[in-house]
Length: 243
Image 1 (cartoon, rainbow, N blue to C red):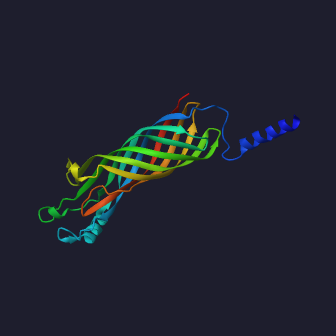
Image 2 (image 1 turned 180 degrees about the vertical axis):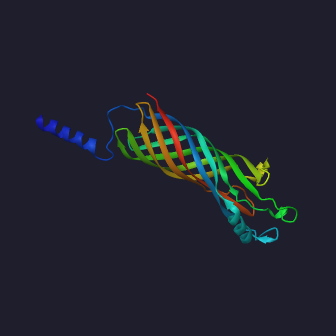
Image 3 (image 1 turned 135 degrees about the vertical axis):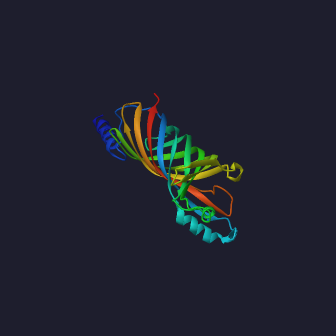
């Protein structure tokens, strides 16, 4: 009997200190719902569909010119997540998000204005999507109130609208217009990867911080010169665990 008790004590000690040092002081539900917001650093990677010219300019020349004037812009991703802890090491997550991706130009004089007037203009290209992610989190450390993990998965991006905004530098005139929605691919898929830190405020509520990167796997539009959108951000969220 003493030998059995000693073996059980050894197994309990090993379980407490091995692996990820799980916190077993409180029993937590496997289901959770979260509210999330991420300011995003957004940009694109240009690609040519194969046609040799855009107007009178070769694709390579036009792409080089666009790379010289285009710069990243700030976007966002916000929404509600639903997660389930499959095991102490692995959890899965989905949800519904609304995202603003895209890029912008530096201040420059468009070709059409060179002969008529010298007005520096900035164009902001915004692409709005409804995102449904499928993500797997793998826990690296779970000790006391802190948990650290890596995350990876895919995001299904459903195209909602595309808006172009022009701003004139001298008089601050701002004009926005919607682009022809029929030209854009209605579905994109983005690969997602990142890390996360979660802090348990109490048994049912936790705060999380998740730097991540998303990269679109498909072109946004089928034109001679097109782009793959990507964005990097830091998601800030609150999780609520059900009993």
